[in-house]
Image (cartoon, rainbow, N blue to C red; front, side, top):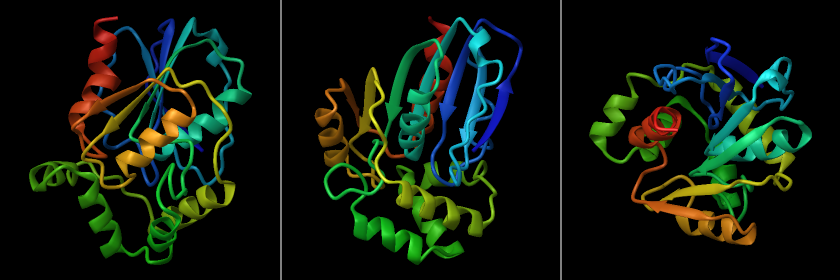
Length: 218
């Protein structure tokens, strides 16, 4: 796993964000949560997590998006950190599952058929419409395709994540990557409160709120 500080100014609180499959810092590096350091995690080919120095924070707020929900669910229970809040956005602890995540046939088909062209279509499906996709193309992560195949294969191999207490889940009804009905079933199974929105899988307004504006007012 790669961990990058977007803000490292030794604030007493940290926003710890687990991004999705295939991500890097590019789409998220311009968000500025007030009075908070900001660390981004991505690349789940391994889940080795370096917690050095994180116990110095008085408060850590965890946000997971997409496969980052799964990654955080696996990593966080092993760490004795002062977690103040945890929010899961358009993801579940079950990466490949007929009823609780991405249906296995679709997950496996994405992995087996991954090419530059199919990735382009996947990214288009993440976005609400052509305008949103055009904007996303300006900040698209630039990682080698082979890395993405290895990452997706490793996520599939590791399977469902153990219990981690998410205080809230956000489920977008326009998500075309992880079926919203499956997300709702997953969170019902884990007794997690859900906020339902009309958002797509990748929705810039969601990130602006949860990675920036929410902390300006707290």
